[in-house]
Length: 357
Image (cartoon, rainbow, N blue to C red; front, side, top):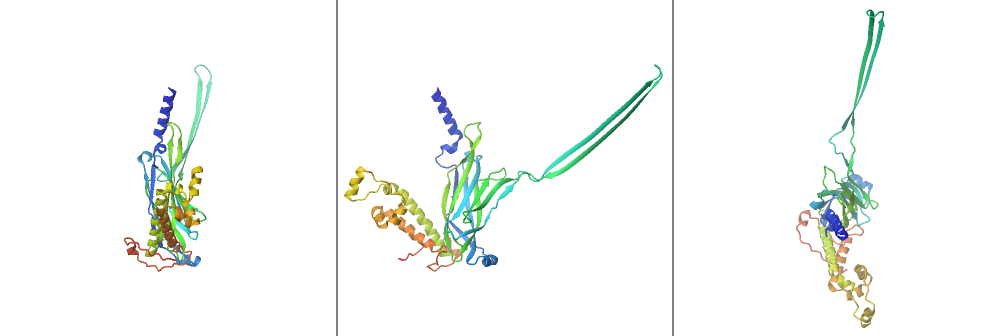
C-alpha cells in the first residue's frame, strides 16, 4: 500500500512538472548565423574617437514556447558577447522599460463630513394646568471633498545594460498581461569598431525561466531552463569579401564541431600503434586525451599521426577559416583586396582562395 502511494505521488509530480520529463527544452530559441552591420558613424564620434567607426546591427532572436508551458514562462534573457576586445558597445535598444497595467492615472477621492446637532429644552409649570415649555435646537453640517490623481505603480517589462566592461550587452524581458515572450525579438546594437574592421564573431546566449507548482496546491517555484548558446558572425554590410569570410568561418566551425562529435569515441579511446603502448594499455587502460583542440595545437605531428584523418582535416580547415577571420577583425591590416558589392552578396557563391603562407 505504501509503495502504491509513493508511486502515485511520483506520477503526480511528474505530470504537473512537464519541464522535468521532456527530453528537450519546452522553450526553443533560434538565431541566424550571419548578421550584417551598417555604417552609422557621425562627425562628432569621429572627432571624439579617432581610429574608430560606428556600426549598427539588428539581431533577431526567435522564441518558440510549448503550449503546455505558455502560461508558465515568466522571463527570457539574452546575452550578446563580442569576441574581439577592441570592439565596444556604444548603444543598444530596447532600453530598460517600465509599464503600468492601467491605461492612465488613478483617481483618489477623500471625503470628510462634519455634522453637529444640539437641542435645549426648558419646562416651567406653575400649576397642573398652567405652565410653559420652550425648546431651542440647532443643526450644522459641513462636507469637504479632496480629489487627486495618483501615478500607478510601474512594473519592469524590459531591462538592458552592458557587461564585461562594455564588450557585451544583456537584455531581460518579463511577461506581463500586455506583452508576450513568444515570437521574434529584435535587438538593436551599435558597435564602435576599429577603422580597418570588416568581420568578426560573437556569442549569443539565451535563457528562459518558468514558474510551476511541483505539487498541485503547493506554492509555485521558478525554474531556469538549460541555456542555449550560438556563435554568430558579423560583417560590414556591402563588403563582399568580409561576408564570404564570415560565412566560411561559420561553416568550418560547424563542420569541426560535428566531426568531433562523430568521432568522439574513437578520439578518446585511440591508442598508439607501438607494441609497448599496446601491452601497457592492457594492464592500465588508456585515459582520455582531453581537449582535442589543445592536443592538435600542442603536438600537431603526433596528433596528426594518431587521430582519424577526417578529424585532422576538419581541424585545419577550421584553422584556415579562423586565420582569415582574424585578418578582418581590425587587429592587423587586411592581406587581400576587398570588393564592395552589396547587391551581389546575398546570392553569390562563396569562393575563397587560400595561399600557402
